[in-house]
Length: 248
Length: 248
Image 1: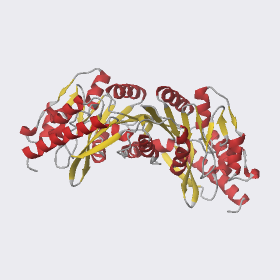
Image 2: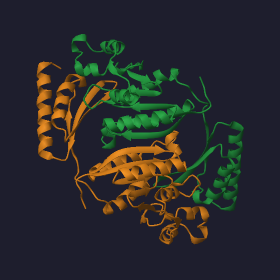
Image 3: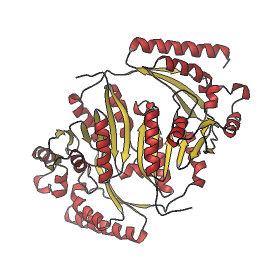
Image 4: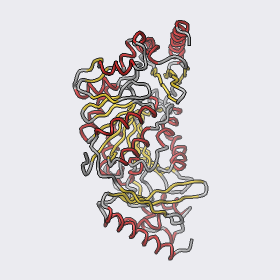
């Protein structure tokens, strides 16, 4: 299924990201992955392992966007409270799910399936399971909320498994124009005029810095290809004019 | 100045982070930096270059936390709208600030100071400037909101410059306990009991995965050192008991 515009938010759950102990690797991955599917990631939030915070963020984001993806907090320990929080956010019961138990038994012996490990099979009522080929404990999808692990390799596998069931959008095309040698401040006025003339496109200027100095790129993003090409060629002409005016 | 608990949020502003084109490097850095100052980072949001989104996020976060730090959107191009959004969020006027112009003139010749570059000197009324030793265009602090560049090297320098004026907290001490060789599901029940007995501490279990398998660490965080030591030794005794019960 495709729909012209599909929006999404990402909720990263975990004290360890907020303390800086763990450096998040999921935001950039999910952003790039969804962009490739034509799903617009519109907002990201990172919240601690605190029930009221997670429930509030789940409800704020699932109502506002077509999809909400979450990462983290679905393991067996006391700080893994995401499944319970999602159930609470939706107002549905949560209990041990027999199919999730079967999945756990692919990796854990029945005798070793203690209460803590069974927590990983607690799934809100009405959710569909998302397979986890690495450590078996599943993620799940409840309505428009996709709940995934925090460990990047597992999160990535879950994302692959949930994608077939999602509505995709028309992918955005991005064109990169190298503005090396031209300071942003020199082309900002011209670029601003062009951006104003193409409100359907997103036009951004991105400086990056190394000890050797700044270099700039202009990115034009949009779904209307002829419009995109026209904007890109106007920007290139504008930059060429500035390069002629001003020896590098 | 120190205060027992100081809270903060971080707002990352920029379409390029949400499209995945630029991988954020500021969240982890700011998280670790603030933790070292005893300032608790409680929430992070990433929003696009859209005025209504930025204004709403600034107001939601500055009211809720002691400090709000922002990164991104303070350059000279049309998509750099952070300063205007912060002024709007506070309901104060914004104009070209003469001291900010002086700073720009340290790097840009007066004849080259066009309208776009002067945008970088637009500062909300009442804000204090934050020096930028790299490209000179300043950040600023308005009330409890600290506005910084998105380019990591510049953001880091601005953070160093704004810190002397901030209220710090009592730093949190974190103790890491290596639980290698013990699956989370085996110690989860014991760890949950200990966590419940020490509500003033934050106790988390963090699995990490490589193709060689999982390894786990338990992190105990808190400001009360004797309490922290007691919890750590209870966890170590609990893990030792499990190791004895179960040959690796």
